[in-house]
Image 1 (cartoon, protein in one colour):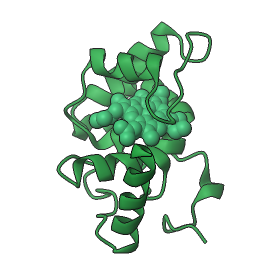
Image 2: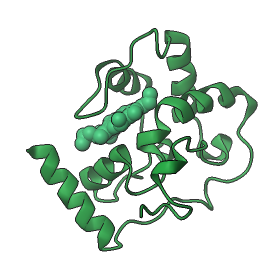
Image 3: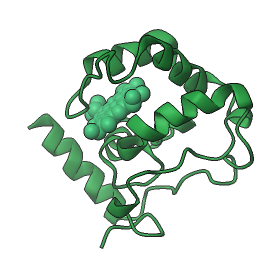
Image 4: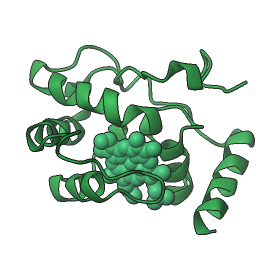
Length: 142
Ligand code: HEC
């Protein structure tokens, strides 16, 4: 029930237009070579829920949780650390599943962590969203 309430609150925010669309101007350019493997892990496993589109499950939940005081898109956050990322990836939360080492290996988790904790300027443009069918061209569903 708690999460349903969060979801409804998030939906109200989104339909009210209060969500600030992704910081595209901040996230442009190329990704530092050392961050590319982690960005690929993020694109494959995290972006479907956490990309910078307001109606994705993770982005919507974090928008509701922080009311915009932190970026809703996980890859725009600069406050995450290795222990926190590992905790959520291995345990999950709400409808975020836990990821097994056979899905995301410890080496890939380390790469993912490097990407999510790097200075924003080095991260380059947002990771590609591989679930484009979920959102329209402008981040809107039908
Ligand atoms: C099926 C959708 C889904 C996927 C896939 C997913 N997440 Fe999540 N994630 C969520 C939701 C929903 C929440 C917020 C739950 C809540 O309301 O607290 C969340 C929360 C988090 C949080 C906590 C952030 C905070 O400040 O509370 C972290 C960290 C996180 N996810 C990391 C990841 C990473 C890294 C990946 C990829 C390996 C990933 N998630 C994949 C749905 C997902």
